[in-house]
Length: 356
Image (cartoon, rainbow, N blue to C red; front, side):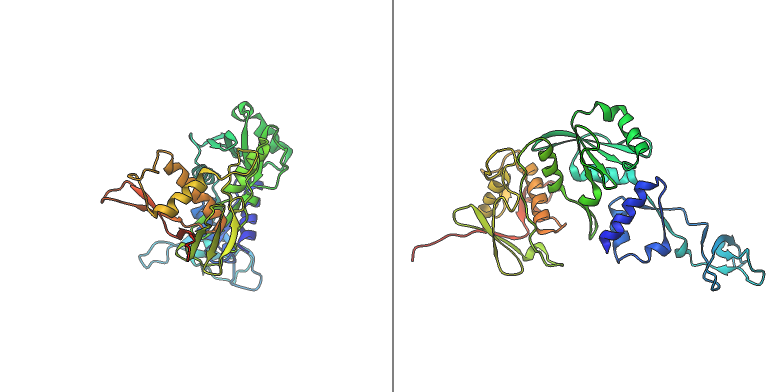
């Protein structure tokens, strides 16, 4: 149901730059859907409606709203004023029924740029149709990232292709609001947000694993294989455990239930830059965390690359278990704002065998 709402919002925003969603429609959405869409930047509240469906009689027609001062010293209140029946007196409207939300693709672009961790400013390079999100680096190399609206029509595609900055980009990733062909824009990877976004508690979830896999596919690189662990709804990271096997070639995963054996490539922790599946630096980092429990800057295993790898490992684990919360908590050696290390919020250990 929530995914249906997300699809409707993306579809309408793609068809109309000024897409609006009224309170009566939003009231039919699942609980927390509006909060997720506004937190994710896709919707923002806008000016109240000047008309709405009147419930003063059975005709339920669209009636204009007028603000009337009733003389009690308070601010003017909204009333339905019927233009069809002279016997109908103005009927007060609950202000909540007039609330409206508009698609905010610039805010969405900024949130996507943050999630993908692009470098550079978000620019609207084709009014109402194309946003440049900056440049990012995947395993397959550097790509320029764009958000496109109206990519389902010939006029829209023509306007997008006409943007000079888009033309000058040799390798790009184009995120569209609608279903589009993968070969719509030559020399660029085109992915639909309908496929990549989902609503989670607190906002919108972007499937970065699929993004990177598709970019790698377009570059002719090996695609990292990853499955989704069947995490029960409501599971917290404190209920998750990762028990690395003694030989270090896999792990037993659990999310409050019986442990299940998983291989490294199933967890998305192999190196996609190599022809043969080999353990990635993220898997090696997981082994270090299993040994040290808390990885601080004083550890011999700590390096300048650790914070970046923690970010990537965070994304893989969130995607693997389908959980948005951070699987790591910052560890502070002193009372300061800076992070001095990392500690998993889940149980992480390596299975060892002892001779009896």
